[in-house]
Length: 333
Image (cartoon, rainbow, N blue to C red):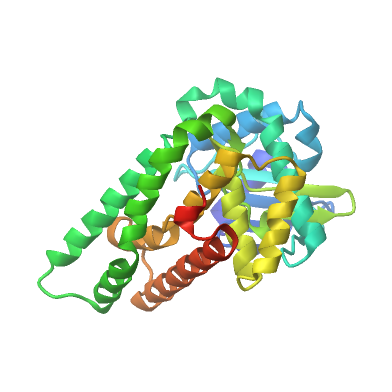
């Protein structure tokens, strides 16, 4: 962070910075001259979404979930963020000394499930009011992503000569493209039934281990950059895949995870079917292709290949778990 940005932070929050340390690409530890410690974040999302996040916090502060939130510091103007000359959003909150969740630890896993479940319950009335942020149906989301995969293939076939990544991506698709079509077909069969027994809520959408902070005063959930209105099953599929990756695709750990969900009365008939279908969809493969062919992320081909290989491993692992626990995707409903 440059001197100009540091000066903006000091001016907007009326603090004098003694030390600043970068801890992520967009996040910093800040210590002031009067001994206070803060977490400074340059948001990955635009002002409109930050305003949405602040609305979320405003609602949750009046619910039982408030104990899981870390307050944003107010600026000298009375707001909760400021913009720099590049329209980037800066937010500051109190630094919390703690540790991240360990998804290999059953206690931490139970707590993570409980915190997410509490978020979903506390946000019911909020989600009902934010109709403009309702997602499309899962069928439509799947169909859109599959259409993008078809476009990716077209982009490759229009090239005069293929690169190494193109060739490997086509090989991966030759193995897994059918999963996109199968997911659309199966979701079409269950989604209307699922919607009748479930309500939309606010989901965190990024339940990574480092977003659960365990400390002496409790457990905090941080980083709502990707929060959206959806069904709770989406959060729990995301968390489940992270648990599996952390535990080397241990089926016994995943059974414990499912029991944690069942103990909270989260699992219902069509909920569980939707859970398996969402898990089966090749999300990670689609995402790597999106980043390479559409977003054109400035990463090396070696890094893209590493991500693609990881996405392929995840898909294989997800299908193995579905087969062993649910008897295969076509037997799960």
